[in-house]
Image (cartoon, rainbow, N blue to C red; front, side):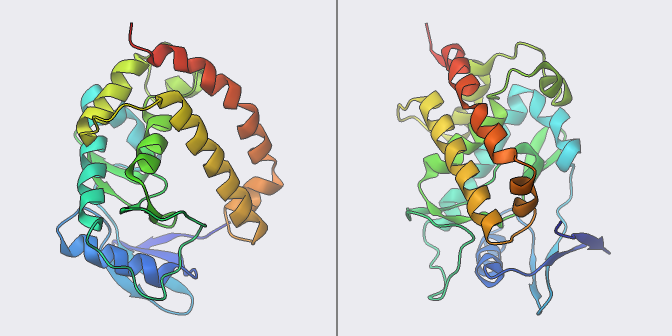
Length: 242
């Protein structure tokens, strides 16, 4: 597995082919005053970024349980997308996964655990390895997978601080309202399509030896995730307005 260390407020992560591109992106965003990790450079072995203040990882879940928390994640994602629109990637930019291009730089993995949270609000966004040029809806759909959420597993919902029957329509609306998205689209189809892409990307990275993706592939997770796609579609009925 990938070893990540935090020493004196600095995150040390194994360097990847795309590290120079991500450090350049973070420098742009940080320079615009966006709450992303301050890039501190890299060497042959490691890259270095400043640790964001706030709860993250498993500690993120209580913050996203409220509609206000969900809305704040949408607000922050929109601010970050907008700040990337006029950024010119390096001529030799390398991204971790294939992409179709687009008007913004997508984070690629905007799930609650990758936000920093304080007082029930998303106040930062980190772990930019999956970033790539794309359409805003790519990240929006990914966020909806986690924040709606598209799971009915009672134990998983409880782990996230949610009831067995969360108001998925209200949570999706809160995220979209925070982002400021007003164009109509099929939420369920967008989420399922984005989840399929995420699975394919895990396989693509795993086949090339990148961790933790290679470990997930070896453990058979992509097949399990694909088996869950019909259940995601079934939840879509809860997102249809009367």
